[in-house]
Length: 113
Length: 117
Image (cartoon, rainbow over the protein chains, first blue to last red):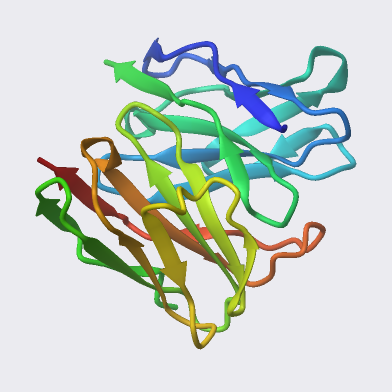
């Protein structure tokens, strides 16, 4: 079955520093991969998605992710973190149909001044 | 454009009681999903509807959970009887299409937080 693993439960980054959140997937074929963000009291918001083609995907809020088949990874990056980026980040892989997803357990991002 | 609406926002019940959650998807969205998010975990898909038909309910605990989308618009998720481990946030999402290659997005509601005591 399709699954994703997010190795880091918590990450702390200084404001203005770069960010990389890790995601590893398990799926035989080309997966459909997603990153979502969940802020306290807010719903899940899609940051970016990968279906096929260019392996470097640009998303909203200055985020990008790179699909690496050889490493089974889809890591999320941002060159300069803002305090408003503090939130829970979820990597997800598409199940058999559409936007039905299998989510990872999430990475909680704390941004320090 | 109005988002995915869910109600109630919060619910506290005793174990063995029943509870129902309601979801109204974005207008025109054919596909509707219910997810369960237990504290500290990522959301888990419970059921996916395409219009009023079930596409995937493989992770729905059918002995106590049921869901319907009779007219292909809004949906109800029911738990009967509830257990302590059902305490979670229940998220509803909708997308324009369930097609895998269609470049659409699933939009999530704010969720219903259920506490079973």
